[in-house]
Image 1 (cartoon, rainbow, N blue to C red):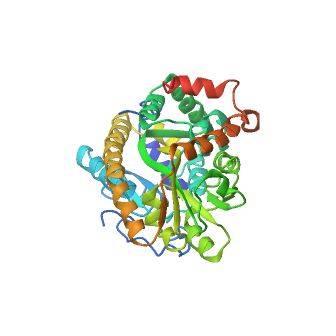
Image 2 (tube, helix red, strand yellow; image 1 turned 90 degrees about the vertical axis):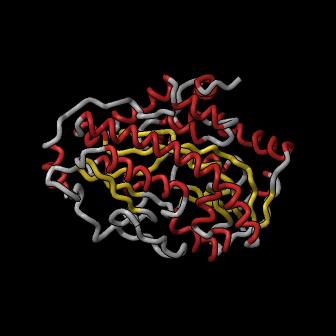
Image 3 (cartoon, rainbow, N blue to C red; image 1 turned 30 degrees about the horizontal axis):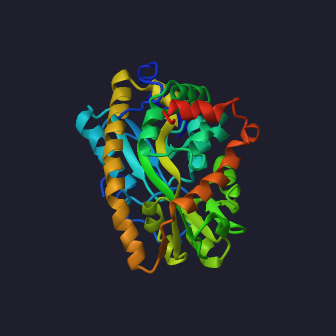
Length: 367
């Protein structure tokens, strides 16, 4: 695979990065399949096309987008749009293939593959980038950091954020675009949770990174890192007591079938990024780089509209299917925010720069 990739990229023009982060305002191989049952095991990624395999010509570059979500979720629909935009606006020398439901492997496996030059793109967040050598980046996934979405978009345009992206490129990872909403992350549990104190002792699944683990631990829960594809079975068997994610993912994975209590705590306003190998990005021609970044940002805006439109629909479906939904009062939310402050007092644990919390709050325009 690597020999084929090297032959492909040497044919490209070595170019400087188009932009430090690329932030701004049944159709493919692997992407047209329906989502598997939520309790099925993740595919090992075997029998996939060769890395960089051409769909039309010998020198075409094919990037494989692997992600945990179902293709039916808003993010899957937006990825299909990104794929078609690259095809419509490009000259055929760059192509995207979609692999939902962890078909290419877990997020960590994909990121590890990128650092070895594999032609993968996946979605990841600051919490993961902290574990890959840029510790300050992790703060963007801290609980109750943002007051609203406008602060997220202000932050990704800031000098601070640009510096984080530059540091990440030094670790071999290139952020293509950052303007995608993943959604407000809420908590779904097998036992009722009406206030922060009710999380005490509950085992809550989080993605496998330190930031999100500590972020839930400070709220009183016991965090459990686990791949998304394993969560349904873990809830069903009582290995964990809950999971957190945006409504689209909770419903798309059918987790409400085995955990029927939802609290709309919005503990993280989760914007996400699409990331790939920095060396591979730099091997693309300038036109290919610009095409990838601009169409990614355009698809991000489409994604954000889809996420906003779908929230009420998913919430109503969950209610109709027997989920008890708690919409916490401002007093209850203040209890969550007070508990969360302990997270920002652990900067030395995460290896953060001095005064990072205040720096980031200023960069996002918070008062």
